[in-house]
Image 1 (cartoon, rainbow, N blue to C red):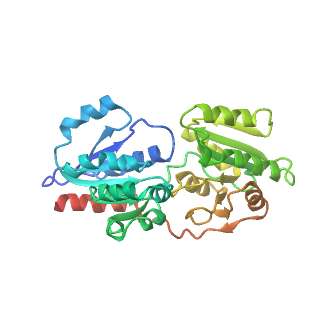
Image 2: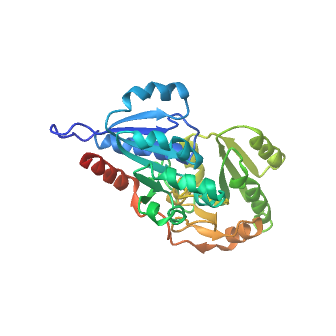
Image 3: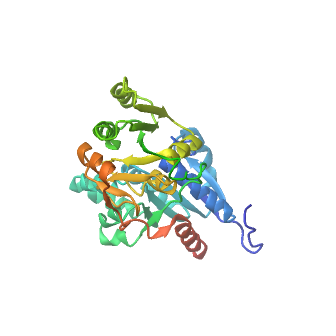
Amino acid sequence: MARPSSSARPAARVFQWAQEHGEVGGVLAAHQALTAVLREEGCDVRYVDTGSASRAAAALPRLWHRALHVFHITRLWRSVVMAPVFAVLPGHTVLVLHSGSTHRQLAAQAAPVAAVTRLALRAYDEIWAVSGQIRDALPPALQRRVTVVRFPVPGQTVEPLPGDERDPHAISVATNAGQWYYHADLAVEAVRLVRGEWPDATLRILAYGDDGADMARLRELVSGLDWVELSFDASPEEVGSVLARSGVFLRPTSWDGDSLIVREALAAGARVVASDVCPRAAGAELAALDAESTAEAVLRGGRPSDGAGLAEHTMEEAAQASLRRLRRG
């Protein structure tokens, strides 16, 4: 039930610039959670659907009212393209950098492009980033606009199982469309090595996103392996069930932010073995990004993360602060 708003103060209007009906994954879960939190606070939340030109165009006439605008991206170039729009929107603007690869995207830019990007980022009143790595890659003047945020773990649809009901040798991994930087192939090879000591070990691959050429290659890789099961666009209930039954969840990514599914797996009671390429949630076990190191961590435990470098504020705290700035205007 939404909290009643004061009769003396109309509901704040919020525009979520995101793919309202986007691919299953962390970004969709994050902006849906933000919408739920803001509506609970009594805000009038609407979408500018960046996944549909026609739906985005339909929202344009409403944009020139004073509002909080929250722009969700993974590809940094989108912030540059849209900077002129956000520079003139009335109200308060927030750029949300979801991808843990953002600091690498910045580092890969040629000097002239980097200068344009730094200038474009000044168009946004605030920047929310999913790790301190992203903030630290920006120049000091922009770092002052950055809040490192944590999005809430989606509600668990399956309660964590008692240890004697969980299969300690059931291993799972998630991949967005089989893209190379999720390294599902590394997970397959790691579990193949693990099976040298745990012959009953299995791997469940939770794939989602675009069912294209990368997914075809992944399916070919695991075809004929009776210890691998691959599912595509599993429901939240099925994902929750898999995590609740997994002894180990693997996260062998080349880049990541504060991965929601890592936190989901930890909340479900699974061990998490993750690549040591970025800050990780407290309790995750760290391994180098290769099959041998990952297998060794699965079998004998990896170095535990203390969570350093991740969120300083919850998403709700950051949103409340943004709304206060909007009201002060």
